[in-house]
Length: 298
Image 1 (cartoon, helix red, strand yellow):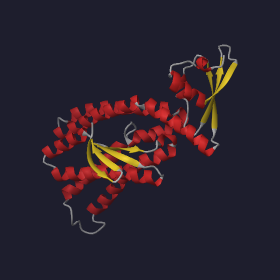
Image 2 (tube, rainbow, N blue to C red):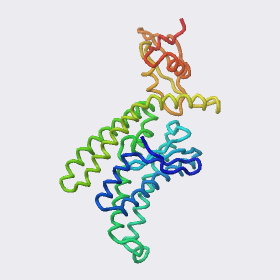
Image 3 (spheres, rainbow, N blue to C red):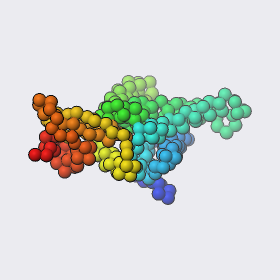
């Protein structure tokens, strides 16, 4: 749905129609200069994500700008390493926090008498950075706060479950913002932009939820490659009944661990030990709804 704005070497920057609609509302309100600076702040927020990802050796080949920030598309999935995902996700809000501190010191005269910007523009930029910092830390996908939440949960409940929780939180946040924007529009119609962001947030969270299984399979495939490359990684055992589906088992898999699943019959007797690779192969060939008994040797 997005339109390409510019291409810089191997990096493409796209603008989502929701962002253009958001900008149109602000221009309509007579705030063209503020809108330009807001666009620069959103772009700077996303470029900071890109720089931190590059520090970890991960290439971002596409940036898509939204009203609340943006999304960077990575050559390698960050979900494999919760620490890296946490650091990259936190970089954007930190950019806005630093800008907030710099602007506050500028406004209060700590750098000398303000010269370049009038006080109303500086006040707007302070509010904009505070909003981008606070809003992006809300715990719901696809916001940075949702990625921080997923990174924090994935080592305990598994990547799939962590993604489902963070995406569900994003949907509820979207509903809340729609209602809040409608209520606050009584005081200022520009508050309807909150409702606009709420609608988009609900849509984007739903998209994250729907793609969770594909992201998860990609992550599992990369983990198998990581095992072959490094030869040794930490393992973890799970115990499951033979009637348990492959999907239910996959949801329990955690990043940075290679799993073995002990399959039990109804009498809780051990039937077989399945490796993570066997379960992943079955998921790709036979589907995720097949019970574990369908994977056992006859």
